[in-house]
Image (cartoon, rainbow, N blue to C red; front, top):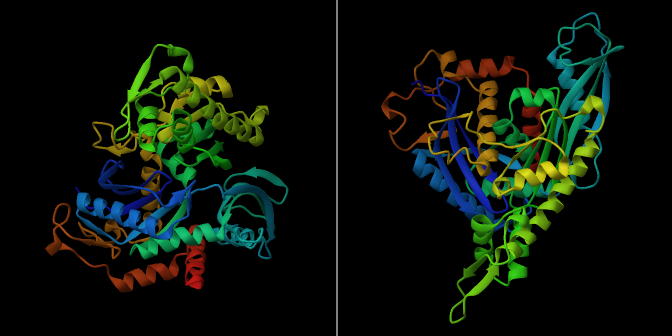
Length: 455
């Protein structure tokens, strides 16, 4: 098998931090080379609130991923979420003076750059500028304007905004952990890469990622991102309620939720009891499964009602905006028993649980394609797609093996160190000069400048 470029996704979540190393095989499937996981104790609802603890957790997850993959990790792509994230719709245009020439990528980039200059609320920064439909002169609903003639280029944009301080804190944790930041992407967009099909995006679908601290929503229609939102509630709210109502410790509450919990309390009888070991020197505690399910049901209903509000805000009740493919649930919270029928009941939409198995190679046990790793896998996919755009590939160089300066091999498990070949630096510089920057590259440069200014 030819050596492929490698990407590392770093999911900095509320309950866990996951570092995942992956590459594409000859069948264009993602082969997971290594995975590292650590408990996240410095992040609350997607926002870093303890720099030191978060740095240590990142180092622990990355170290475990290095051991399982045989790679020395130097660069990661990070997911960003949290209750500070918001989105808005914006319309903008440019007037082309050279209208006798066709519209090029340069014109589109100029329009995107203009949107990046929008004045946000104090302390906010634009994370993503995602073009939707274009309009050239009087012709509307254009998906790809490149190659067309026109003097006025207009577009609708979906703009994702976050707090500068929260973005900087994540970046600082990554840098302090000894890693380079290749890019950031909104976590629901990463999860969508892992679990949604092209047909679902085209027909119209709402992705709901129930994580530990937040519930992330991404709505697609006509293969275009239409709406994003972050609800500041997730699985941790359910665990906290079980802990408070049943008077037990958090670890016991989490185990109760996973092993015996249900989002539909009607199936449990009053006589069904589970016994929890007491703390040192104390009697065991008996908990009714019906009462446990009622607690979970109440909290899940609150989350799903908020999801329903966001879907209505998008405009699902309009015939033109109808989400034909319904709703796809992923994340750790989607594994709660009976959460799918409850979601169908509340939203009135068809629902399925989103797994990443169609993208993953060699996952016979289904451990990696588990919904709780959807964001991590999506980040790996995004990282690999970015590398296709930015770096020389092995095919360009005509070599069997490629070398990426962001990785140092520490074993011969996947690579023969003696046969490693360096890139032709002159060729790379020449290629970089002729290549126009994409809006992701420009945003990455801008983000790095923010980090440098804060030091």
